[in-house]
Image (cartoon, rainbow, N blue to C red; front, side, top):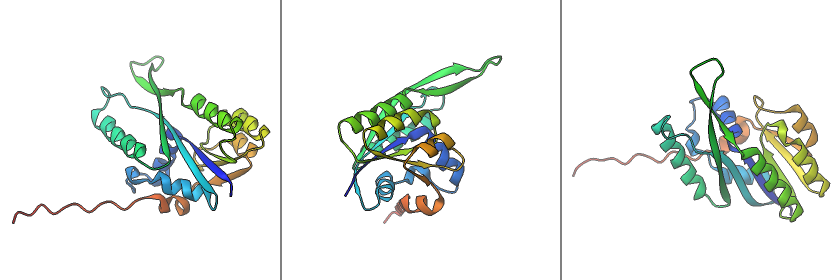
Length: 192
């Protein structure tokens, strides 16, 4: 039985889910442990690393608190480790508008994956991202005799990353529908 570790590019994953499901699913009910078990198959799922950054509280408090609730759920999920990076506000050229960029998530993920390969922490790394910037990290991990599988969304994938990995898994509703928990029924607040 092979040892499997998932490395999830959280921002890429969130937007992939959002594009695939739109508003038809409550994304906060996504069960990452179930997802990891499906990705590991008959092998031994050791760990899931999830990389993201906290939203800016002052920009949208409601979104911020929803994300914090999601992060708390992740922190309390068996086998999941949340790695928070930083969010950087950038001005859009020629406009009086801003957008946000997550900084450090790709480098943290790449370093953790390479470090894990060198420490013999896994046999198979499942890279859940469609970002071609990971190609060199994948090459280094494979040089250490490890297998790297790429799980990606059709709308967010890199042809070069897909070509470099040992195996590619397109994330579809057939796979992902199994990973959503059922919503808890609301309690009836009748007075007796």
